[in-house]
Amino acid sequence: MIEQKHTIIEIEVADLLKKTEEYHKAGHRLVQIGTTPLGDRYEINYTFTTAWDFESLRITVHDGDELPSISGIYWGAFIYENEINDLFGIPVNGMNIDFKGHLIETRIPTPFKNPPKITKVPKGGDA
Image (cartoon, rainbow, N blue to C red; front, side, top):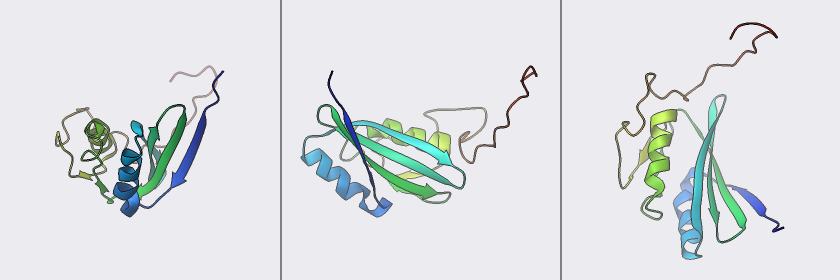
């Protein structure tokens, strides 16, 4: 069995393009960009790999913050970045293809922005 390693590096938004460029120059590929709402902030993980070892750049943003696009470095990142904008309402500046909020159209605009608190349904109760 191959042992995988996953390192998470917390950085500031201002360092995102520089660090992403370093991964690109070192031959890493972009695996995913994942966003998680955490109350009054969002955690965004940019994950890269060369083989079996993964490294994630983790940034934290708040409502009103904007992100720079990494699609000038990793062209396909525009899909993730449009999702971040459409689902979480976090603007991403400079995307190589910007769907202007129409990549993912939902009945509720930015459905994952400040999600409501989830309460458990009592055992045996209706959802």
